[in-house]
Image (cartoon, rainbow, N blue to C red; front, side, top):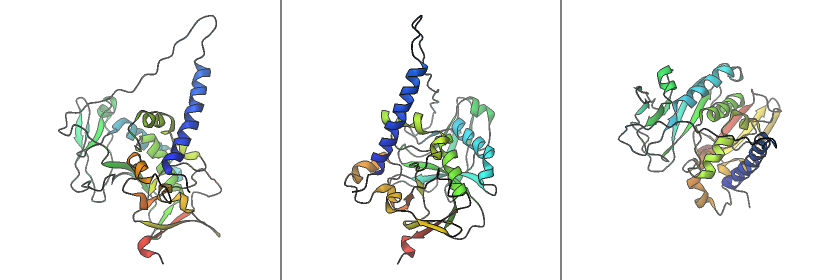
Length: 283
């Protein structure tokens, strides 16, 4: 039986938390000659006056930092541009007529949403300083967020691995992934929401294809490799706990479009093609 995505992610969290705790213990050990105390300062939270009392929201400051990282590392995707994307998390989520605002303590402005549910953010120093929130008119846990970085001119049903590597790095920097709302999930975000997570050989960063997947193939020159099934569908095949796992995964209604990639395996260059065969095209 395959290991579920949630269990595999939990293993990553345990290992990372253990390393983090060990490092913190060493760094904060008491001096025999005098005790020292360290205190972790949590980031401030902006509470908006939106009519929606439980909104989906992300940090404007974090998303701008993601944009900064894209500019810094855009050599990885020299011909691409960055957009953010909204995706459904529940079957009943209405993805039509989404309205979005950036709201701080005194600054607020609207964010246009394209028909494909993508958007960009303008830079506003006042909103950044106020730790404003990016808030669509949808409730929490009904949508999820990703970056979209696409090199133009690629063949149909094809992505470029360098673009997807940068999507992961920018998405982590921007704090877009929201797989859990419990204390473990919050701790996981502290530990794992860094771009360096994407440098692991097999990070569990979920990508979503445009349509339900039949297969995903990596192609670099003469080298071809079809991803095994445990890299697709959030490792849901033969997972007896799937129904219990899904509420904690932002892939909840996108399982059939989900895949992970060997982002940190540099034997696959950035120019590697990621080729998709969709269910509707399969044999």
